[in-house]
Length: 557
Image (cartoon, rainbow, N blue to C red; front, side):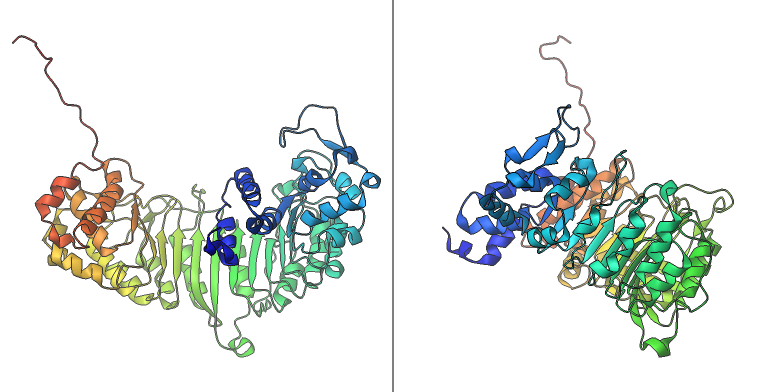
């Protein structure tokens, strides 16, 4: 065995590399790795069993203890449904083998879509003591997503052990209020609570009341993601001393249209706030309820703010929202992500409205911004080089800049390569940019685009942080495709370019890759090539194929 494999860090790195988005493929890779040698066995099994669905427990139990139905195979698992489990048939040595695997589990999914119903699982874990013995490292619990069957949570409380740090509730039924209420006593160190309800019709007032009463008693809660429910829940969340991350669903009927009193929401440790709403008035009302008392909370703290609305805002409404957000003195806005509905709501969006710098002017006072991602749905966007320069000077620490990445700008952008260069110089940490540009023949005459000058730029620290540039529906004249690619490859030597507009402009991304390759063929200097050489090699990259007409051999003329 190679000496490097004696290092635990290397072993764990290899095991981690087996995890990807394909769940079953990842598990097969870890099983194969565990079978290679003793060095990989435990690290691979730890990772394999760290997060499991409920059905996994029955894989390591003897077949004689399991009773399956006689119906057709289940469409989710490809297996017959498990109907019964007999604990009395399991020997001590078989329990020891079961615990070898179960005691590695950290995340447990109780999902009845996988057809291991909770009553059957409770035959394996009849009491909380059995759960504590078999799952001593359990920290995350995911409760079920119902799949058209009547589901009961009578047996779910046995999984509320004191080691739990995170609970996700994806549905609720008649007995759910009791389950929610038991969280306070059963999980004293709970740090994360997620409540997701896909069907608005399932909303129950009893559940909302129980949740509102319970949340204020979870004193170790760090993260809450779920409906806003009643005003009492908002006040309860705001009183928690350790709550730093809050994500609220304020869409009807999950939130009553009752705005909190101004300054009544303390949120002493708040650092990240996400709100999803269908009412701009309700949104502003809630933000106005957050206390802005700098004397009570000390110096200003960084805040990451994400807002999404189901309605389109007029430019005037968004300007007022920006004014309100920038007026906070208790928080330093470090990240602002806003997205409006793509569709236009009658009366909320005015025909032909264009977003300009004056609309977001109040945000220029937020000098600590590192992330700005704005998507206005159906609105047009119009920025030029001077606007970009003003934003860059206001936000020197900017790292991510995205405008209307999901949709389009709708107008011909006036941002040029010169504007991009100024942006990168003023914001040296800029790593991701999504914006439209306009590049034409007039760019060629600028002296800064001489090849030797481009090499000098590439050696500076400016632009090196940029790794993603999405040009969206930019307008780039066909005559400057090669020129644009060469300039982009030197302005940001580490960049990957994408462009979503239809037509031949898609080739810009391939041209940038080839320009980088040509640069490194000459010791990292693009100036070692002539423009004729560059044009001769690059002009055919990504160009549409054109059929040539050939005469038939031997044809008489």
